[in-house]
Image 1 (cartoon, rainbow, N blue to C red):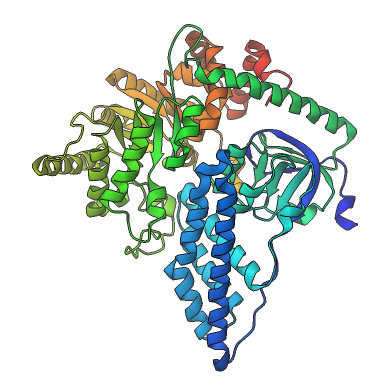
Image 2 (tube, protein in one colour; image 1 turned 30 degrees about the vertical axis):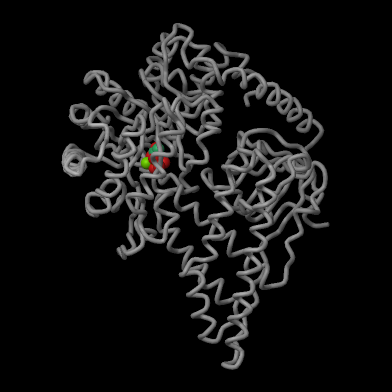
Length: 591
Ligand code: PEP
Ligand code: MG
């Protein structure tokens, strides 16, 4: 029994990646198992290579089956690309070639494969960008599938899921997630994973509450254990007491009611009670997210992270590949604009043909525009593709990780050269294309008035800005308690940026995760932000708060908040005010 004797009301906290409350019993899909390792004889090498190749073929068959299942479900069809990504990984030369090479050095296929996976994972982990780093989960998923096949473990566990199951897994691959039967699964929790993993994206799309990044939850939960998942707050309650159960039941009902209410907001204008408009746009990583973004009321894309496109290619994508992707997004989002951010690679290991040294401190290394300004040919290819897409619809170009005027001027010089080339070649583009920068370094905040003279818009990347301002690694759980969006230093930084933009008469947007927090809407109004760009699923919630406040409410509140001395005081004050002003939204059942 051991694990089932866990205390009543045991709380675990991870990352809530898909909102909603699920109450049910744990169904443990323990995907971790020991990889058998042994040495092989010279005479066994060919047989072992063949066993590995057969496993590859079987994995392709399995994935094609999943693909067929997915294709028959309209709400999942847009995610087929994930399976395609997995199929592509199965063809990857490094994965296949390196494993075969190791087998030829007389090791069994399982060990050769897991060593290869380890090497590839290290490459991924050195990437500073959260989004790209989390793509390593696709590699893991494919690796786990191959290891299961090689070890003779049949993939049937998902079929055994009973009614009202709360799936617990060390890791749940996107392919597994897609196959979850919504009528049976009330939520899922995983040890691994981050906010921007494919699994998290899918969970939101499926409307299944999910908490990831619990680190070792699968070591404490057991099959049939009763549990509650709160995908909004990232809380898991194991063995809930009757009191807790009732409390969460109330929250669940409130959440379901709210969901229905929120649907109403999708088509309403994003404006305050005194008719001040704020553009609510979506952050986008992949083209297939465009329809859901529009469905959730996005009036354009405020941040298109182009890194993903580079990630999925074995060589940097050429101009035509990039143009095809950009123009498709631009066409599909028309008549609204798309802000295309140039490559923001955290580390560059993933870009083939570039063998740069491991960086000791990648967050402060060759990332964002620093990389582009070094690899000018690659940069020019991307700019040509973006400019060509600007002839198809409204495009805005944005440069990441700018830390001073010299960098933006360098970018503009290169952009001008590319424009000139296109002109000479008779290729059309929007000559008035708007140029903006991410404000995500403290230096950019300090010189915001100077930067504002150089560009058409600012977009504040709070994910990085907070990390750099407060010197808190955004991915380090040990200092997570210091990562405070409402820290007085951050509020002051935001105000400086917005004031500089207003003084120069340019637009200012926010596209970091902070923009998706409904509680912060008065701050955004007080700052005078023109645009908020966020995960599309958060748009209706933010819009609802926006429509229930006036711009003056925001200005008054921000003034009060700026007088407070600590992040905690600011947060408590804002919380109190919001509960008082909007009890229906921030009252007893805060969802
Ligand atoms: C940010 O830093 O806030 C941002 C939006 O960029 P990314 O999360 O891609 O670094
Ligand atoms: Mg950033």
